[in-house]
Image (cartoon, rainbow over all chains, first blue to last red; front, side):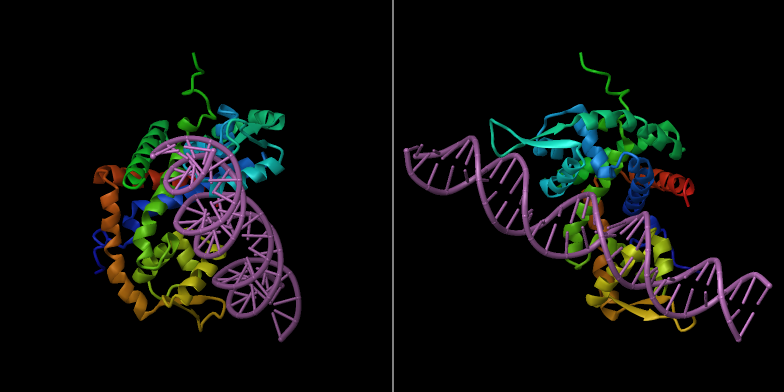
Length: 150
Length: 150
DNA sequence: GTCATTTAAGTTGCGTGCAATTCAATTGCT
DNA sequence: AGCAATTGAATTGCACGCAACTTAAATGAC
């Protein structure tokens, strides 16, 4: 004769947010061995994905694309610079802005990185429909949570 | 005449994982002002949720419930102990295991914490069906990603 | 009973996320 | 032109996550 856990607001099993949190942690863990071969962390991989598509953008623009701020990105970009993946230049028009350029090594790395999404899908043995459903729902609540604030 | 971004495997817009990652970051950000009043971080709130339901469990059991390891939990529990929320005792049967007990202050805190889920739902202006869909999908991929490893 | 193995927790080290603050360059107002 | 307000990055400080390792206690094989 246990309590009705389906009504308990503080029951872990009822919380979407905990599922979201656990799924994300598991996802980042799953990426690790794949990205280790590229000498990248998951956030670094995200940064590289943006830069592979849009070379020469600013830290601000990068932050907008990834929903991250300079407090996170500045040290991360310095690490990528140390690895020889990124050049952190300055805009000539506006001395405040950093202009981010990828190196030739980064362009080479892209070829290996292109295999990562498929490797990841092999572990995610879920239907493509479910995954696009998941993406829509995540984008949905992201929008809600951002709108209610900034 | 741009490239077909829907086919580009390294296009950010195509990646479920990035949506998941951004949604989780946004979710944790949204919790912050609510939990600040309880002097808890989101992971600390998760720990307290488990302990409110299951007082007297071990670090191991807590880790199983939250999918976190002692490297994360030990320092977190020490902080909760400093705040007077948790007592980190020892099992008499097995000297290795910590027996975690909540304090009276933690029991009082639970009353305030019970309001948090509803406050959170106010920001998540999404239908309940969508949210339970999201939860199912997250639990789904969590299971897939865990099974493929441990 | 002894010793290798296993197990629970703790420690170390690194890379995030992010709030808060600082700094310098630019913009806007007048 | 002069100066306040704004903006782009960087810095500081704190709390995770987690891999890798260590420590100490318990278990198991013989």
